[in-house]
Image (cartoon, rainbow, N blue to C red; front, side):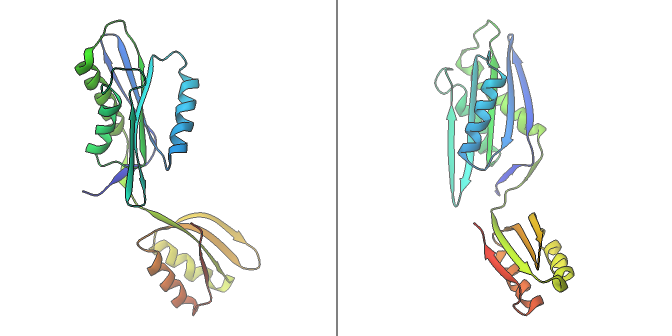
Length: 201
């Protein structure tokens, strides 16, 4: 099963016995982004009883997984959130679930259901796309090659980061890591090796 990620932020909710569980699914590229989002949510919802979350982040061939119950009974909230990510084969996504307590205890099975359902609702409301590992490259070329280069970049559906027009054109972009070598080869062919190609990361 191929891995997928979210195109953009999405939300889901679940209510039970007066408690509200608001889930927020956010695409992230590293743990630092998770922490930044958590900090913002704590400021945004200072009176929330719990902010539980789980994430899966792909680093090379390895997937970094983490979940926290954030004060809820052990295994009742973080794991059900993480299980939604695993079941859907999602990577580079964090799901936060913000709980406001409604006065009635739900018990561990009730919490597992509530947190899992809220997380699932957030993912179902989102738009998924195939996860691709990108390589950043920079290319430098003369103006007479611009049309050929533009046409080639469209064929490879690259993500342009920035273009600088100076004495020559320098374009920074993200390319599917599996297509980087093919793109480099074709750029060399259309320019007889005149295009300078540099890996950024």
